[in-house]
Image 1 (cartoon, helix red, strand yellow):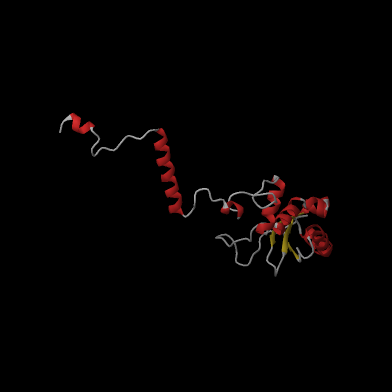
Image 2 (image 1 turned 90 degrees about the horizontal axis):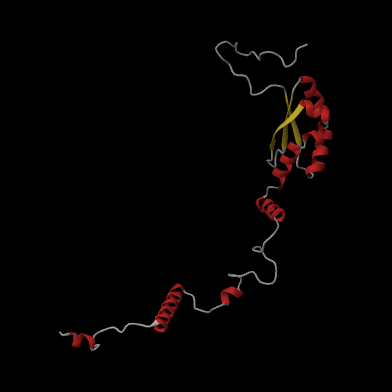
Amino acid sequence: MSEQEEGSGAGRVPELSGVDLARQALAAAKEAARARGAVAGDRSRARQGGLRSGARADGRDPMRLGAALERMRTEHGWEQPMAVAGVMQRWDEIVGPDVAAHCRPESYDADPEKRELTVRCDSSAWMVQLRHLTPQLIARLNGQLGQGTVRFIKVLPPGGAPRRYGPLRAPGSTGPGDTYG
């Protein structure tokens, strides 16, 4: 074949101009949208709440940080654990400086059957004193946290973890007492 036969246009794809390219791209985009199950220009999904918020408030609208944290707290059921954590931080205010100097809260069991606050004292005398104050403390804590949050206060004696038997310890011994003098 000669150059004239090639240039005559027989069997040759014509080159597309800018407008033709745009039409071809639009047709390809519409075809891709149909393949995905959407129709180009269809706004029915937007009216059903899929794409935009609208005039009334809903869960996707912007909100203040405090409101967002409060919403998260209620959605996840963290009210009670967060309230108890607040009490642990404000222990000095709730029980007073004298008791707070000698007794510290260790844990809270949020099990609905228990709802028990565990407190450790630094001496036997303060342990006995706190046991006498338990009804007033429970009433004060429930006033701060909501009725029924604390049903029982477990008062522990001084010391840390239970003592273990070792090579130099006699079985059954508890070691030195908690107070001297």
